[in-house]
Length: 242
Image (cartoon, rainbow, N blue to C red; front, side):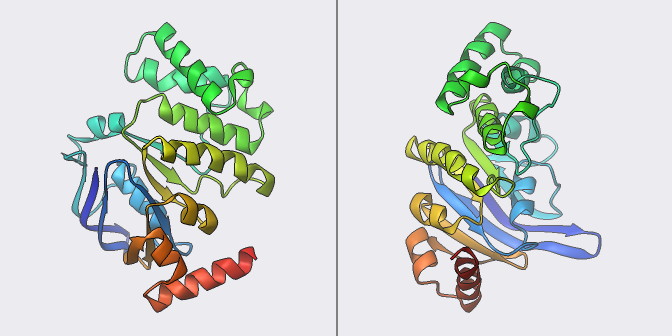
């Protein structure tokens, strides 16, 4: 579904991605873990074209991520951001129907009916006419997931979707993501929630200084990592969370 082959990304004289090779199969849940600044979020932003990669190739469903392919890519891949990115002056319902109506030219009533269904799916139907400012962080992030689903994506990219939330709100967002995984949604998730990755991910990739240092089945990488850097990172995270 998603293939990165030798992807390099530079910001000025700093090389953030150094020949990244990564593949995500259709229906797979792959979690990217690693320290701050390792390149995890940049991988996602290159996949959906928010950042232009400097070398290598990225394909999504066989379509190359470049200037010609971006419109098709963004119809097939949605993104859920760390900071919600909801329009503050529009209601929850209007946030969810924005892209289907104005980007994909879906009839308003059709988009509205589907949005209400999706809001119910994430337990936010009762807030359809609220403004984002009236919602908690966890509620806003669930609206963000409904907004992503409204595009009928083939895959969803999650960029640390719980890192901006209060601890008591994390569980409600992870519950929705678990349900998506059970439904077979292709997901590439940047996360620091190691227990969630162990439970939900098919595979885990450890990103270190711009390269994929280790990848494998979630249970293998998180329980018995083969690389010393992976083991050091997990020990540090688990100690902090414990």
